Image (tube, rainbow, N blue to C red; front, top):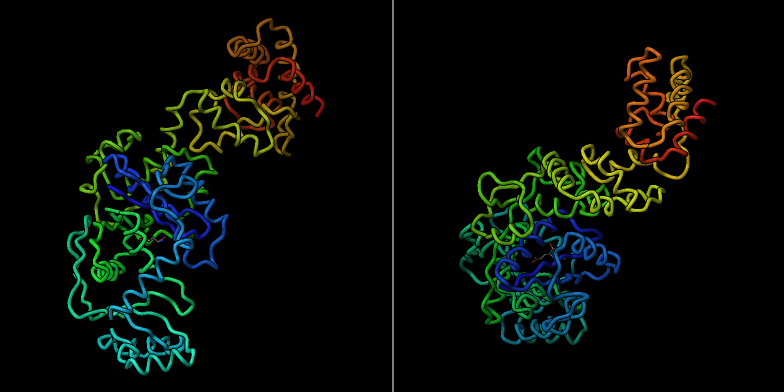
Length: 473
Ligand code: GLU
């Protein structure tokens, strides 16, 4: 199987695109086939290098490595449409020559007006454009006058059946398909022409893509027939909807992969979650590692029903993946998050802190406020935290804790705990009340990871210094 993901680089990788890429990748890996990345940048003005980088970085982060494409090369390149222009114009001219296409001299304004008029009576939607019936002489005259023209494909009467691998047979009436443009007036290819020639040139065997392209497929099948080429098999993936049942949009959820990556969703969790948007291994398994996805994936179990984007499920799943990591692995993953927030902690030190926060994280980002106390600088105090240090009980607790901790020969969580419990008891304070000022002194916060472990991690010297400082507040 030769499969491809063919994004238009619009600035970021959409989660729907990521699901399409994943399914293609899984089919390629499952079958020992080839996964190709092709950049569909025919509409040059809109696309930038950064937009392409954004997509390739997100794909690489998800671990969906392509076997042919940008940065990798391959026998069927180039893999960017803007570099394939000659192939498109040559094919369009051939279709023109063979009478399967014609020159259209209408201006965009005229066409827009006609479309407007057709909407008035949908049943009379015109398949053919007037230019289809120009005589050879008329065409020659207009060309000689230098009137610019597009090249349109001649849609013939009848029906076109898309034998879809996901939805079964879908029948289209050619009567409502307009003679579509192959080459624009400026000589650039349209999506439908380029995609057919690219999929042919890249020997694609299976086109698996979003069902927003289903209505393009009959046009593409007509083109394959006109070009005398065997078409690939097609499978159209259902739409992703929010829990409100509406198509996933920016208003409902964050739709870029980059957003999830930056919050600290793990790539493996993301892949697992995306895999289940329209496919299932069986009726019950939800946590499926990458290897099992590759082994178990098939189009037979892909559904045509809309897939629901359920953020709670993703959060839950991410937690499962986070907890399945070793402390060392998690520490490595956390370093960039803490760095970004201005805390420069090495991963060995972080690995010791990970057990304190592992159970409390849904996403990696959650660890930042919890672990910030480990940074070099002493924490600043919020107004209400400062106030909580002013009570008589708090001051007595801090002073007595300072003394007790100072004399501890071993500064580990267990020893710290028994020393502080003893102090609380001696002062007649409930543990919960007694430990709060110590927590604030150490972390600057009323909420923190487990206190005794935090003290041990911070170390004796810094802990004592912070308590002394709190006493001066
Ligand atoms: N470039 C198209 C898109 O981003 C995909 C076309 C295709 O897969 O055929 O929607």
